[in-house]
Image (cartoon, rainbow, N blue to C red):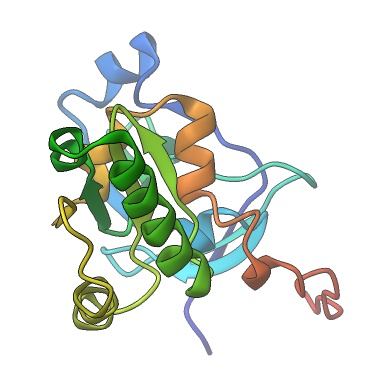
Length: 195
């Protein structure tokens, strides 16, 4: 006998909603932790941190969001909440280019765009900082940046959560969505589900 699988077809709410925030305040919460890639899928099967097996089967086009409440037991006051782990982000700071003449600054920015484009790394530019999701290991990304060492450009690695706050919804989707990435192109063929 395998573990009992709970099928989740609808999200009950989100912990950001006022009524759920109140209900969950003193509740016992178990988390279903997903990567941002998993969170894109409307069907997945995964174990919660507490060991419950959840099979998520949402309507087409729906996907889980951070804080979604998947299960609630009023008597026991326990909930299962979705927690989406955002990948770290490389933040490339272009403010050093301001010290250069316009032509040099443009030349450096183009070189940087070329270096990132060669790696097929998605990027979002906001207030003079280029945010690139860590699609590769930090060592690999550092090596690419150091190989192209562009004057006036510095970079650092930040947590996805800290960057997420600074972005609009559209920018966050571009950076963390992965929906536009080639990785999601081959998921249209679902096998048959045996119950």
